[in-house]
Length: 199
Image 1 (cartoon, helix red, strand yellow):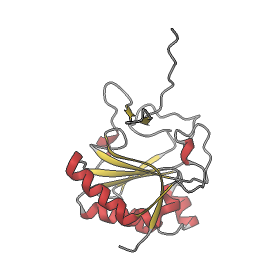
Image 2: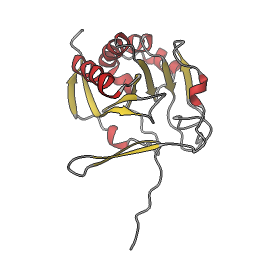
Image 3: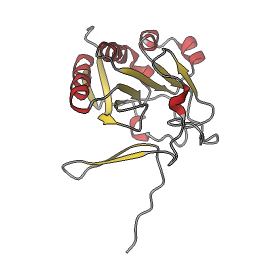
């Protein structure tokens, strides 16, 4: 391992709503894009949140594989390509554990080729599924699972998965809600408008 670090916004050791099967999910902190309607606005500011060595994150994945039976890891944000060096190290470790890697980026592949952010090629070399493109609230995607808007593309960079994973279940989009020991509520998956009950 190279000793790279990550600035994480949040982490879930097992989810079924951030990609195919049971997966860990990593939300990195910081994004330069400001897509109106972003479902993770708290992860946009370029501020220090939870700085963690990439090697430690690989250890978390190994533990999650043993305790929760995860089959992969999904990297979201924020913007993963701003932390591609550290995430590439995590993705290599995940692959060594037999896990698949899915990445959501607001940058298109064309933009990545033009901008050449540090580590982006290394990260894509160990990515199985890439969802690229900014979220566009004027083009909501109601036909593909996990995809926010119709302009976003799904790239299958290895044979591990194919377009069958995009099929929506009969009940539609999924949302997970977790309540922590101190009563902290954490939600992930497809955002929905929630109405406060009045009584």
